[in-house]
Amino acid sequence: MNTMLVPDARRRVTLPASFKAGQPVNLEPMEDGTYRLVPMVAIPEHQLWAWRSDVQERVETALQEHHNGEGIAMDSPEGQEFLRRLEK
Image (tube, rainbow, N blue to C red):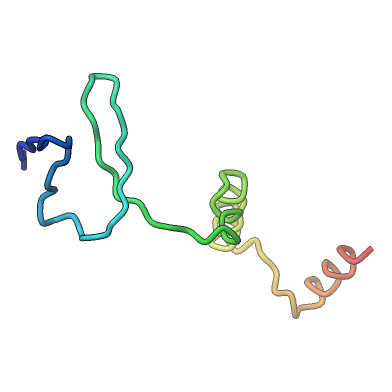
């Protein structure tokens, strides 16, 4: 769906109804000179660590290992031994 937006005298535009009122958006300039509006969400500062790329990669690896049956339960003897080694 293409919608023509015309800025008013103060360079404001009215977004289509599909955009929620109060929804933050990022205006991304594209290489071809166009712009892209990307809906954004606010993340509490104390949770930003979880969105770092290295953390996301580790979570993905852990999930893949779990799905492959490579994990161990922490309440198993192997899991308890693993926890003891971490404490050292």
